[in-house]
Image 1: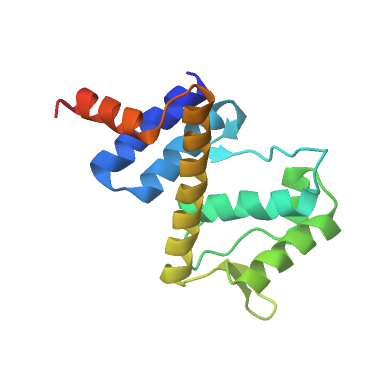
Image 2 (image 1 turned 60 degrees about the vertical axis):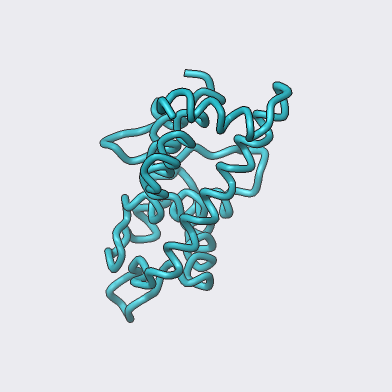
Length: 160
């Protein structure tokens, strides 16, 4: 399925269901379908960019999709680093970033946990939806269409 087709389908889906988390899961599942194991996206890192922000974004995506649940204890730095194939210091930097942003918290020596802040997670999902919107908008512009054309297509597909 072409990337633009995926976005059209997903926007159609979210407009019909108002389900932001379902949209995020669908995007991740479709775009990363070849890079998953056991339903969870694998670590796909771009060597041309700084690694720790990519690690942090991957973990944020896991949280937004619900792969990591609120209050859930995450794996140790060493285990996550081994799974991602990176230096533990790099993973530590990514986790510290997420902790400073409030997505994770530490409990003494028992490890790190996903935040229980529902408002923060809702805002994370909205930010991800905003990125999807801009990607779709840019894709539409690249083929000479606008959102009015897209909405017309959705209405046609829904039978409105």
